[in-house]
Image: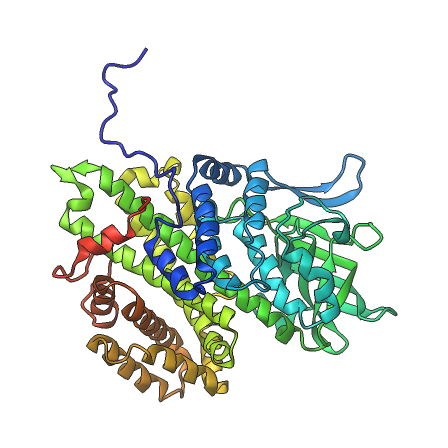
Length: 545
């Protein structure tokens, strides 16, 4: 019997049953900008199909179930045999299978592949970010393997396949495979040159046995891994399969799964190698150089993944305030709430625009664009991933107490938000990598300056920011202590340049006034009140247009 005192009013309907792609104007415009006109109709169709799936009730339920039922490690079977398998909830496999079938591990061999994949990754991982890890690692393994044409010929068709087959079997018996990565060890972390895992050559060409450990090994249920180990010639990259060509299991002892703050649906592990068979990738002693392209690609995915988290958080905040009434009107119509929402929307659009610009540079693959990526990827990785936690936290607050409750989905986004800033090199690592490029690769700085200079003269605040940046770049002595400050400015100037060229005037104006012009406070919701904030918020609202 219903309680007479419990009439539910002024509650917000769920944001469900919408097209995540077409509801995101910043993303759809970026795709239209960077995809060749002859490809655009089919790309719009494929991303719209994925967007409708991502916004559906069943995909949202899969995400919730995968998060609520984290993976479980099974080290032994019932007879005591070592098996080292990870069990996932069926919803995890549904998410991952849908992603693979949508081409989210296939960017390197199709026209406009990187923009298409980045847009799809941004759309689909809004349903649940955890399964993005194996997608990212599998996609990013391709350029590393291409340093060895024989290995690439064997593995690349399986890595880029649109067929998902769970379970461990010989790779050539599967229609598609997933890859993970193991670089860091407990004594060194990011300092991979201090790795102690040994690689002893065998008689077979390029074959080795590995002995050692990995403190963080991603996606341990995968079919293969790229790992670093010390060979006689120095630190070297290796391909380590879980199942050997004869069908037996390789030695891959999973010690435990990490108990993480967020990213609960994904398995991260500690593993031990003891006579583990592997094949060399690239030359001995050039392990970092070989695997660095994989690292760069996963860093871009950190940018895209953070943009996805921000987009979903902002969409939820705007949706909530568009339906929730307080103090005599809808929250979205209150000037102060509108200021907060517009500020969040600027951050989200800037992140999406930058992420897709980087993906387009991968597709272009010219010397100029490769030089631009060398400095723009770590710059974007540093800044966009840092902003993610702040954006999601403020968006959560827009829902009030409802946002702090698990059923809203916002706590899951908030726990996920710091992840991309840590994975593939934390903030200091990215800032120092930018310094390394500035000092050693002048062509990278030239490409970066040409990119930001494309909007020069269009806004006096951008022009002033570029001038200040050039002053800072002219003095690189003792720059390490101010590296974060420098890279932050580089990221903001780059985002400002992109928005001036491609975003609506009200978005570019608000971004330049606040982020470049200094007319901004220390918290979100402190934009100049004279700006057209209503248009900024309406542009970011998630609904089918």
